[in-house]
Length: 140
Image (cartoon, rainbow, N blue to C red; front, top):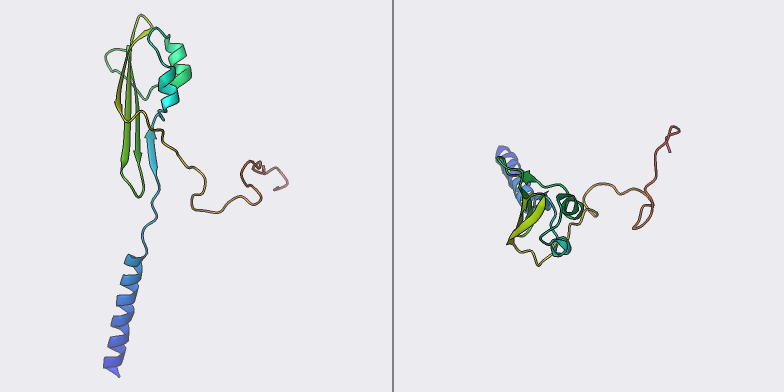
């Protein structure tokens, strides 16, 4: 009888360990930095003011520590079940005018960030284009 109990406990332990390793861990895409699209980069040209650049690109992720004449826009995407995407755009200003645009990474391909469809409960009745219900003092 003791051998039967030992066998059952061992089999149960093996099934539990196998079950945990069989089911994969949920992963998400992790975007970091400033989103850089081809459309944004194509609108940039030398001679633009800082305000015009900020309107197109947004505020820079980094400014050069010793000079405010260089803005760096960095984007990094760690894809859940794939590789990584890295883009960097360095803009140099002189007398508040854009003088140089340096690019690195794959600027030609746009990254699609899917913010919907993640885990967790969906708001009832809120399909695509439907307004999200607001909660007021009465609870609804």
